[in-house]
Amino acid sequence: MRIAVLHQALGRYGGAERLCINVCRELSNRGHEVGLFWHDWKLPVDWQGLLSRYDEFVGRTRIVPWHVYKLGNIIDELRSYDVVLVMHHMNPPVGIRVVTGLRGRVPCIWYAGEPNRGLWEKYIAPENTANMKEVFVNTVRDIYGRAASIAASTTPLYQLATGALCALDFAFVRSYMRIIAQSIAAKDALSRIYRVPSSKLDVIYPGVYAPRIDYHGATAYPQNDGTGFFMAVGAIEAHKNYETMFRALKALIQLQPSARLVVVGVGSQSGLLRSQYHALPIVFKGYVSTDYLSLLYSVSRCLVHTAYWEPFGLTPIEAAYFGKPSIVSRLGGPAETVRNGVTGIHVDPSNSEEICGAMNLMMNSDICAKMGKNALENVRQNFTMEKMIGSLEKVLEEIC
Image (cartoon, rainbow, N blue to C red; front, side, top):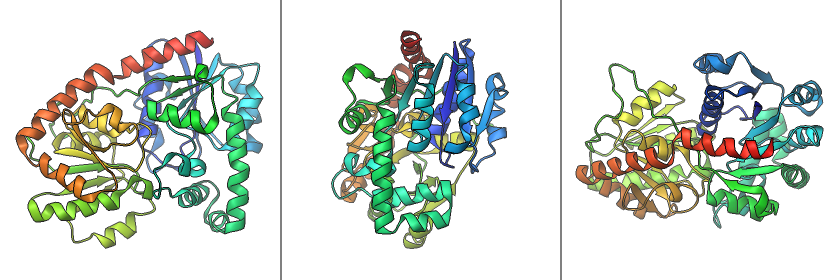
């Protein structure tokens, strides 16, 4: 089967990008001819070095100018494939151009993490936590530059732009032949916002590969003895709710002076939070390589993932593959993948005292180690890349 994979990451590199590359690799390993159509915006990583890990498809990777007026040749090329698989989501003007250009010729399906957050966040985030305007303006800056983001932040232009883009987004999403949600929470949000019939919606949980660590002599699956640092991985944006996590750490230090936190990621709130919480034992790592991220997972104590609402959340299952439990929000996808009291702890993401209590419990080495062992077994059984791709292949075969 010839499969075109489209991914538009808006200049960021995180869990969605790691998942996209791993999906391409596994589909290629199973004998499919995979073409990866990647974005042309500057990434905070060396994409050529990143993709060079996967020789089986790097030669068929296209760096695409995701602008409507430049898409004609790309659409002609996509017509030579059996199916187009969109990973994550696309800009509404680009999406409707691609879907309508392929309609009746090549089936398009969407492996969806969430609705376009910059447009629909107030419909998916809990009350009083939505920060739609900031997300939208930040995305405009990533695509079109600082001047455009300043213009988009003015009330009249913001209302006009989001209204038009919501209409486009709604129209092109409903044009997909099939939508695959990453979790039940994501499926519910997609169904509610886009009014997609259940016959067009599936749920396939993402998977991760068993990590191979080869960094300064580290070995795969080190024993979790409950001694390391707490760890947080993800974009430092308002909806990821780092501030509540940091307040929880501040309270925890009063009970456990040795507690510390390592944060992997960057974002619009990096500078502000660094200055506000500079006195706390927090190490900001910024972007790190996949190998170094593996090392951090392997020597950490526990992952803390307290976003207000996350459609799936790849990092808790990544951490689990290293035998690490997770503290996660009881809202959204992470609550489906982390078993409360067994492989981690569910918390109210708005309650710093509750998060502090969970972190304090994880300072108990025996409890931490036991939950970590359970987490590893859970992810090996339920969240492997092999299981994900097997389910995805069935959907592709039905369509093609």
